[in-house]
Image (cartoon, rainbow, N blue to C red; front, side, top):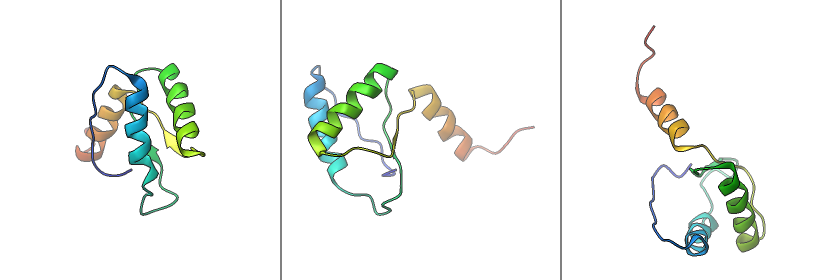
Length: 83
């Protein structure tokens, strides 16, 4: 994960996929690290994976959580376990 949250807005998915491909073209410091991209549906996950593969040539090792799952993971990472 890149460690930052970047928000791009548009009403055209193709433009958003282009912007994301530019971001993802820069390699992570750890080549085995997994990218995390938040999506709203499994259909969006499939479309986005295919769009990135088309733009970048190869696309792999990415996880696509829903917004609520990412919020849960973030809260669990910073809050202590409560019995």
